[in-house]
Image (cartoon, rainbow, N blue to C red; front, side):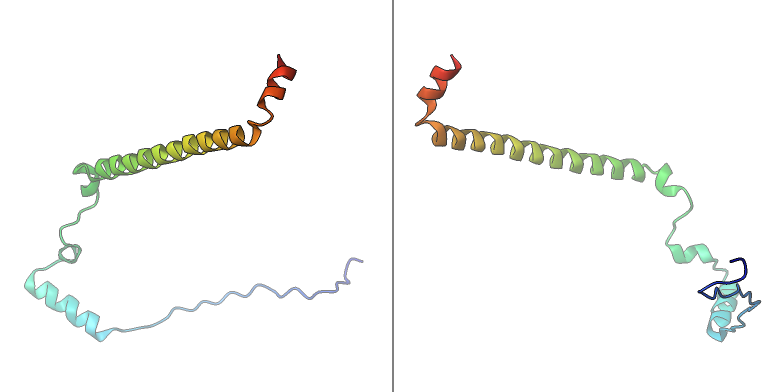
Length: 107
């Protein structure tokens, strides 16, 4: 069954398409910035690559994340302890009628 197939597989097509788009407004803005002596970094409001790391912003975010995780961990532990206590009390009340018989069987 070398040349027979039930499904036709399309051939891969390659196109060499280079879109040509001219934005006249963008060209005007860039020209005006060059005339005024502004560069592209003024748009980013003073952000430079790595400034967040050097200023300790990443450390503050990491500490904030750790505090949030610790808080969530404490909440889950409190819920787990409350659930265990509640189930223990519920089990005691359900089995208190048979508790004497259970104690006699075990001991």
